[in-house]
Image (cartoon, rainbow, N blue to C red):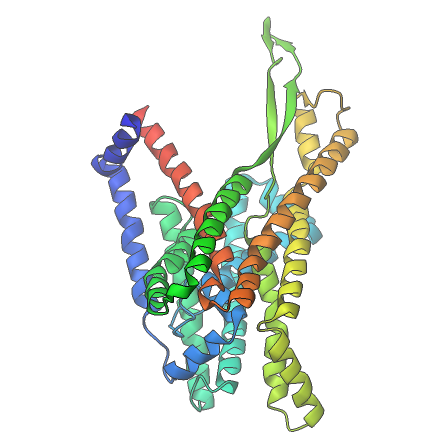
Length: 423
């Protein structure tokens, strides 16, 4: 306990660390101010009704840092930047040049790779902003916009997304922790007072057993998220003994940690991106004069904004994308090659291709547990909302997963900074 209070005191007494923490706070304040400035022509009543009827937009609002809920100038959040980074990572599978740039050219190569992600953010923000504004205009959330007004709004939300990308990178460079994750975290935390007020306003004494059950479930889910986020499958590694210059090197045993949840929240972002298309198509077809097209549009809007069919698709997509993203980011053959070059091996497994097959087999099993966990956390609040009718449970699981992951990462980063200053 004394060590804990000592570290807390050191956080605010060390000039450099205090400067970093204050920079993060100032940057997040700027973000929240921008998130409160709406774009022109918003019908707030229609917007609130539209959000109440769409679980998908509630989830999408999480990744926008709560900027979408009032159609602010940063309504796209850091979503386009995250999508651009994901696309660039996927392209490394198809382009040997990009793969070499990211994995083999060191810090300079990664900086150039990041620059490509930034450039890709702009067209993605333009496309996503236009699609969302068209959808909201068809739903009556936005007033009748002229082509010039639509063009202006698309430019505004694109600039807002690039602005948040810039703030996130400044936080990563001059603050503590990952800037993009902290922006999403700040948006979630900023919505807690409003959700608490709404819950208290709808308090019903007859529902006390349900409230107690929800609190117990919340504690269990938080504990489960922490355990699964930190869970690792250690693979034993031994370094062969080598003699150089009359000295003995190697002979050390360690382990290679394989995380159960290698993909983090990226599969959820993938799934949300895919589920956006049926809604956009449904909104477009609903405005067509053809009765068949209108019927198809109404079906897509009814089944891909809420309901059990939406939840099933969401579960399956998160599960599949967990495997997909893990396969993209973790290359067993590259790990096996690096181990062989450094004179390391897994006891009982031959170096080279046999080691790669062994690691791939372990990764397949651990990823299965991680995929089930992510899928369950993603759809559990939707199922609870359908059973209880409580709108406050719509985004709990995804938001909880992000909050816990960001807090754990921030604690590690702060602890690393404190340890560095102690030494």
